[in-house]
Image 1 (cartoon, rainbow, N blue to C red):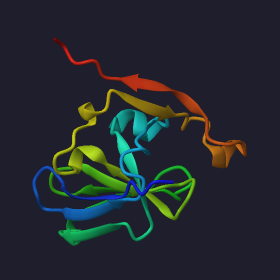
Image 2 (image 1 turned 30 degrees about the vertical axis):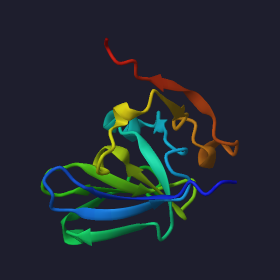
Image 3 (image 1 turned 60 degrees about the vertical axis):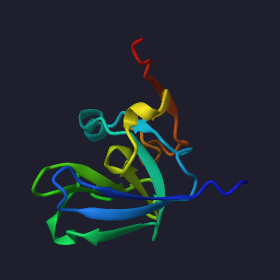
Image 4 (image 1 turned 120 degrees about the vertical axis):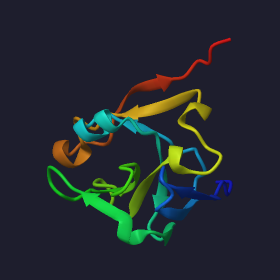
Length: 141
């Protein structure tokens, strides 16, 4: 496997929270999810391994949200409300970071984003994660 790791700086909308992430597989891991929370949030995320995210400013400004089993921890800025990252439910050693918070990155940079079936979560069904579809962005001419 080629080393596609990249390091990016990021922040929330108001700038109270700053962080640095190392994406061990670059943007190859981008995805969205259909679970009730992700569906409403609408973020495109990339996977970060444990230790691959470091809050460099404003850790005290982060608020944590948990629901359902409480295993996943979703973090957002308590001032501007922007979701920055979360610790995944399916693998507590992995985080997902909101790509829109990363410097020089937009969710619209990706023509296709895989969508994971979070409604039928592997921890609930006992089956492997299933792809629910693909989100496509087609820029206007």
